[in-house]
Image (cartoon, rainbow, N blue to C red; front, side, top):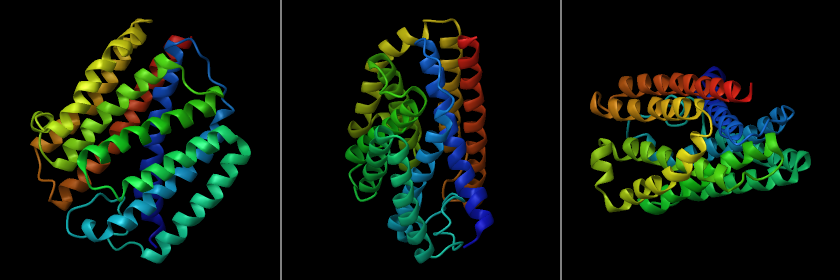
Length: 274
């Protein structure tokens, strides 16, 4: 196992992604008038460690396919930086220990975390695009719920859920652009993908209602969405996703972008709360 690569190429980028999601939760909650309980950081870390097991499991399932194409640096197994035995050991122990500790810390958080991990692992065995992406929406939403439970001690209310689901649908569309490896316009023309765009349009109504509760809402909400969506589109148009060097570059660009977007949402949350 290349431990430096494990920490630098897998753990750290995934932590940046989850912190970005945390910042978005704080932003949405602030718009709805909720102040966080900062002791929730501990629950968030328990959730992150447990959920980390899914990345190891998914790579084990996909390793044969991953070896045939250019993959992100986070795919340590496909790039020969780890063995299947090491990955299996880490996945099992992270899941077992993480689930136990999370459930003992907060039973509700433990249940949500378990469901997120379980459904993500199930998704690894689904091949149909529509069902696979629908599971992605559910898993991403459960990620948000776990973070919300950590910092607010309860499930997000209906308006909050609408905004979080809108994020999930937009994320799924961006994910489809990468997986299908065609521009967003071509992706939306597919019947099995257009449904996510349609649902996103429907959820835009309650999302805009929440955003316009404060002047910072549309500025930071729409700005954050553009920070994520536009680079997804541009990277497909301007490079070859079969070129390993290009894939490496967009991986690090994407990680940096997630960090910037997280700071953007956090700034919006602080402005609203203060």
